[in-house]
Length: 102
Image (cartoon, rainbow, N blue to C red; front, side, top):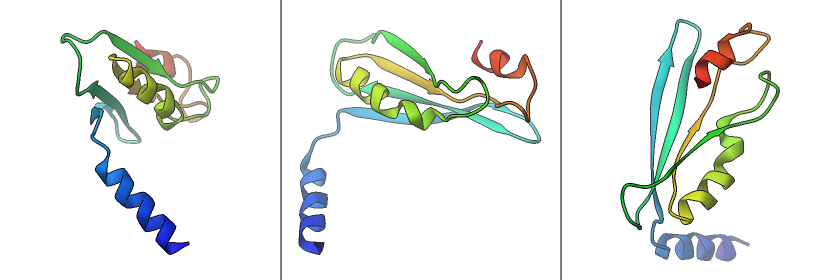
């Protein structure tokens, strides 16, 4: 099992990077810091078209990490992706989550 695992890690290290990911804090308050990921393709014609991802969860659950697979697929197709999180209910009341994504 260990040999298979290390072989897999070696193969992953040989795959060229298809993207560049940067994380930014776009909102900071005493109780919370909200981040977004900017994911850019390493190939293609600039400027890249941009897709803005907001995870589901009825404003009360979820995470931007739930959108990573979609973000990766979009980047492979030549899109830049902004993948963000927002304040969740019930800790934060309406209209806080909506304000975060505007």
